Structures are given as structure tokens and as C-alpha cells.
Image (tube, rainbow over all chains, first blue to last red; front, side, top):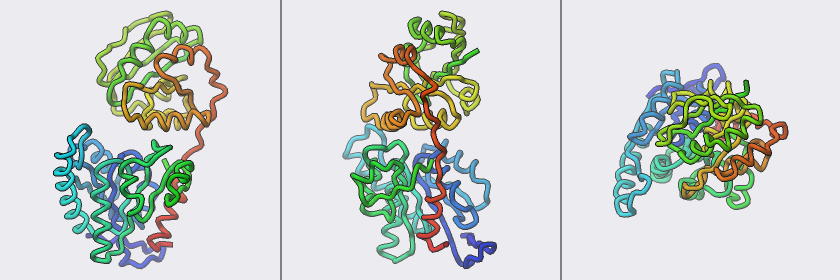
Length: 183
Length: 164
């Protein structure tokens, strides 16, 4: 894996920022665009399989060589039964574990539904079991004004940061961070 | 010639297409000075009339890779409550009327439209109240949406990763 060194800013050149993203495509692309490309690279985008449109958009936006796209199976489809979603979630979790333990990101940046949860949980397992220094940040969608999404609720107590984009969510979720509207 | 752009997003919202092309609504728009309407109808079954109805020249298409030009060319955007549509129209500085699709369950998208309406950035209604909203609207009262600022977010992550 390529090293993301930053000589110009005097960073340690062993500094290896690998970033993973999953979920709501345009929000994720705006968030990723806000991060310094020289410091936060190489970048790996994760999309749900079958969501090729979002993946292509991600790669078209990313012009740097370090960006690549990975897909993992969708953990849950709209309207899927509870029993079959247990199975598909397990399959997605295994794929996410394999991906995360191969990529070994320093930062996992997630937003939106579904796919991001197994990726975040895998990164947290990597941190808890292998003591790998990985930071998991979940950014709640700008759509969410009154309550967290299911992904946000699952990750609320687990992720290193849960960032919301409307201040009224802080009353209900005091552990969340608010730093203005990001997208 | 003032133009209205109607967008339903990637799926469908036939009820909005029917409502906005009803003689009642077209007459209201015409009385407010709008002479042209372009509709993006997605996968909907209802195909709007083409030609001039009640003094408004109507044309439509299903979808395009980007509707940015249609947004930019419009004086008024009427859209579904999708976050992408709301933010794209407001970022482009367009006057926006958002029509919530009440047939969708678990309609969290309406949360954002409601919040932006509460801050005076857009007008928010349902199909049943669209005509009245258009008849009574005062677009000069709408407030521009301040641009998003992701800088604190980037700085936060740099601090967390020990990069600054």
C-alpha cells in the first residue's frame, strides 16, 4: 500500500493515512473533498455491491492515483425480511472484516445507511483486538434533523466520533459533535 | 420569460406531476407571471401535457445526468423533499417550493425540508396545498442558505489523527 507522506508540511513520512468511506455518495464526496488530499491518502471508497453508480461517481471525482473503489455485499435491502437480513448482514460483515483487515485504515469516515455499519464495526474490532490505531468517524446525514439514522444509533456509543449537522440533535444525543452544516 | 422547473428526483412522484400540471395550478402560475414550465418526471407513469396550457408552455423529460442547467435557468423550482434536490436548488440560489410526498412512509427526507422552511430558506407544502402556496408566496421573504463550511470538520480529524 502506498505511503501518504507529506513532505511539504513536514509530517513524518511513515504517516500512512488510509481512509475508508461508505454510504450516501454525494455527502461522502463533499466530506472527503474537505480533507487535505496530501495528508489523507491513499483513499479507499467502499460502496454496497449493486450501487455501482455511486462508486463510479466517487472515482470520477477522485483524480489522485491513491483512490480506489471496493464493494461489499449489501447488508440489508429495503423490505427484506428479518430472518434473511440476519444472513445477509453476516455475509456483509465477513466481507467488511476482510476488507478492513487488508486495508488497515487509519481513518474510517462513514455516513449514511447500511454498508457503513459493518465497515465501522470491523475497524473497531481491529482497534480493540489488535490495538491498531484507527479512528472511526460517523457523519450523520444532513437529512437527519430530529433523530439519528439506524446506522447512527448503532454507532452512537461505539464510534470515536458521531458528528451531526443540526444542533437540535445534541439535546437528544449529548455525545455527538456539532460543527455546523458540513455539506 | 419567467420559468418554473419541476423535479421529482430519481424515483417518481406522479401526484406532484399531475398537481403541478393541473389547469388550476398552471392558471395560478400564469397569473404570477410564469410562462414556461420544464418538468423532470423520473420513472413516473403520468406524462404531462406538452404545449401551451393556460398560458404556460410546458415541456418535460424523464432524467438527465445533471439537472444543474435546468435549475440555473429557472426562476422558481418546485421539487420533492429529497435532500439532494433541496440543497442543490438552494446552493444555486433558486427560489424553492418543496412538496412532500405524503404517501411515503418513514419520510425522514421531509425533516430537512421542514427545518430549512423553518429557517425561511424555502416554502414547504403538500400537493393539496400547492396551489394556495403558489398563489400566496412572497419570494422576496426567502433567505439565502449560507454555504456549508467543512473546515472545522477537517481540522477536527487532523487533530484526532495527530496531524496538527
